[in-house]
Length: 329
Ligand SMILES: Nc1nc2c(ncn2[C@@H]2O[C@H](COP(=O)(O)OP(=O)(O)OP(=O)(O)O)[C@@H](O)[C@H]2O)c(=O)[nH]1
Image (tube, rainbow, N blue to C red; front, top):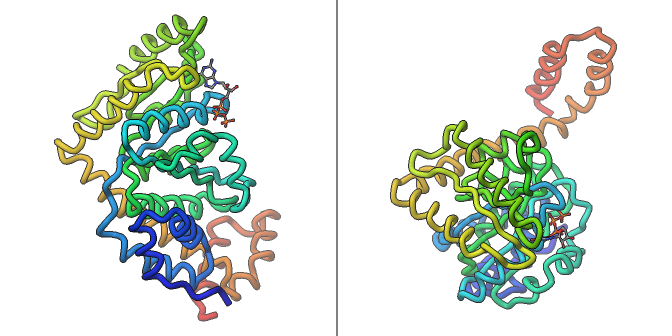
């Protein structure tokens, strides 16, 4: 039986900016236990009027592009300018357990010990849907706790970029100096999600190469239709390691925010995300009920074998499973 939680005390602690209560509240929203889920919803309902006030920024890039270094440098620049910065991660393949925040502490040591920042690793391995739900709810907790910049990092593989793009206001793509044919290496789908693009590691001997790559990428981007009528994604160069160009990257993120706010697109984007989130939770919940339904469990092996052996079409098999689900368990 899970421990009973004092939702009012959690809400008060989060609003006061207590780091301990915030960490406990995040653990609560990450829980998949049914009683915890209900308490988490009560907590979020109480905090809802105090949410929505941050710049929600997604950051992606292939492993090795320098995301940790970049986030640490950008985050520190922002806290020095008086902002409160939260860093979250979406990594459904993560083997980091809830307790091993250490993994990220060492990755972003400076930021993790900054009193104006809060670094939280990805919820430990789970379905992308589950990790996404916890992350969306954590964004709300961070906002209620007064963080006015929320950086959501994705691992840059699989579906996680699309998921993160669906929960932020601005999506930043970090890339490496790639020219000509190598540009093909950037997944077109990811390029289409990006609101701001920065060629990272533009320092030392790589600087000119990065500038050239940025020019080529600008050319390539002209072939894509921008996602917003009021914004054309800029291509910048920066260096997380040497803290070069980070102010310009942030300036573009801010300008994107302003442009979308003024045109009304930001409000529309956030409401659309809310509706999409609602349906994704319905899908998750329905799937979870379906796979645990006793009638479904009783026939699932046989049905799968039937499909594998070619005795059942996929359509017939799906019909059998859904029929079993509709029978009262
Ligand atoms: N020259 C240069 N090297 C950098 C820069 N940023 C990061 N690096 C180096 O690139 C390597 C990867 O950096 P990380 O920040 O750990 O990269 P990451 O993308 O977070 O990597 P994962 O955590 O594995 O996804 C490290 O050896 C860094 O020192 C930069 O701006 N310039």
